[in-house]
Image (cartoon, rainbow, N blue to C red; front, side):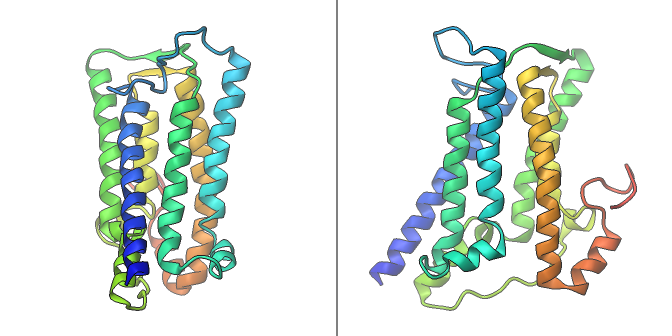
Length: 249
């Protein structure tokens, strides 16, 4: 029972760190409230030169991308299954992802050179789309299983001493419109801004490229897990762009 309680506590701490990183991300990307954001820094010294800023920022985003993708692959999960209880695996993934995000926020080098600056109704519309993106991303986690996605469900199963049940294939709500509404939400939040700087543009481009590549690996894993069911879903439902805006992929 002590071990089961420790697993639950670990899952709760991991979820708390995720919550902190997610809330900071809202302020970081949108330049709200937080002391250091994508375009502003509290550092008193001179800003980093352009070359240093690009290299450091790309390394930070690459670190997140590598960890996020490698640990999500079935081969990696099989590899560490012998050394880490299954009930802890998702929480560990969430914890490491969140800590790397916090590192990115801390070490990010702003590049404030303006790319575009909207005003009036255009600025309001872009801000609205920005927050709509975050809402879509957050809501999407609950449409499937929020607590499974962040490791709490697995810890609760372990607490009861029950075997962790598999998840059936479901396509609720937004998943009937696009296959990856969570990623669509992130893309809207990253790109929709009334004040686009060079640093923000680098962040948006790099993360868009990562999302497009990572989804190819995720789709391959989903086909391997759900077979013809997912292949049929893939034919019927576009990956990111609703059909009213573009042809399905």
